[in-house]
Length: 236
Image (cartoon, rainbow, N blue to C red; front, top):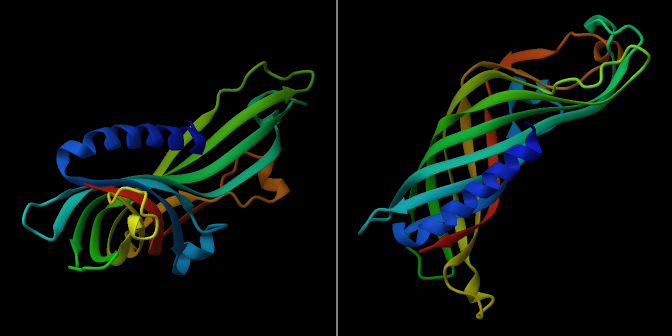
């Protein structure tokens, strides 16, 4: 279980979403996300989380409001290193480790579309949900006279931060620019200012000494951030 596997799983989710959107009078799509961490959260992680998310919204009849959900996965740290297995009982053995720090995000979404007669459709958006952090370690190529044949990969779920926020954005109707395209395809640009509760998480930021031990570096803070997105959505 790692970031690539979660991405593949969410892609399958998008496929099923796209097959049902015709019958739900909804908005469905995929976005690339860049999350600008704020305050202590920013100082504790190596880089700003980036990932993908899928959104599905149902347009309430005779209303400018849409309601639905968003599901995503983001990674903010990864490291490749060689680990000494002495502390695991394999004196003189080494193993290659690929480690990732990620989180799964999930939100209930309410969107208000501002009336517009142009190719741009601005909107306001509110989100309520959370992010659940996990650390993933993949072990490869054990070596040494006392090395085991295989070490089981490890995924550890850490803390969960509940989040809420407001933001906005706009959708760009592509057939205004490319007339050969259907009017159902839009580009979606937006941002959300999110407030998060305090939780525990880990960020790979090891010195060589820590790499070769069983000690892990964990942090505790709120998870306030600004989430930016760029995506493609289908409007029906």
